[in-house]
Amino acid sequence: MSLKSLISRTLHGKRALLYRPAKAPRGDVRGRVVDSALKTQTRLSYPSRQEVLAAYAAGTPVKEIASRYGIYRGTVWKIVTGAGQPTRNHELSPAVREEARRLYESGLTLAEITKKLGVGRVNARAAIVGSGGTMRPRGRKHK
Image (cartoon, rainbow, N blue to C red; front, side, top):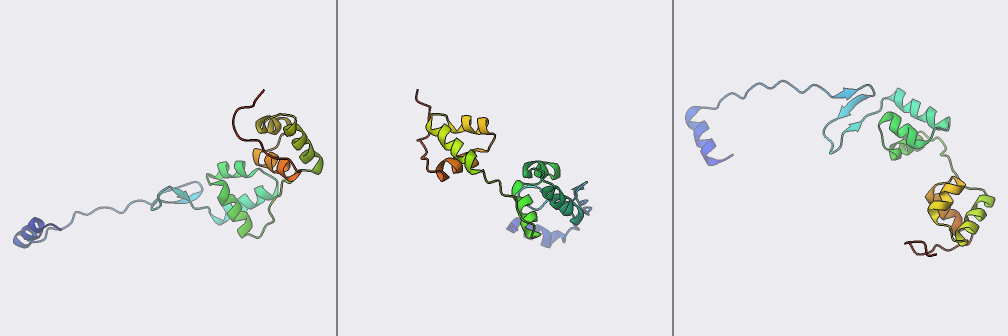
């Protein structure tokens, strides 16, 4: 408090603070929303967490579950592992791994391989390296 304010309050008496009504708690259909965090966080209720677990067990993609409940993909993993539910492992078959390596060595880019085989970039790269291939330097494809 500044010295001027202190003197003024001493001479004139302390003024009553204005009454401010309490803020109404924020929320939406999923439950209470925390407003003290840097980013707004949605607190999932117990039934919503059970729905996340059921959707994951049914094979729904994690990205779809996260967008449906307005949470991060990492939060889905935390809910699943916290409940002790086994996680899905999308390991590629040896034939697909070998095909990815063969295509990469024939000159296709990683993006072209992922499109052709219908796998993710990380899985395609792991398949190439795991089956004995080496990655080319990043940059334009040389013809």
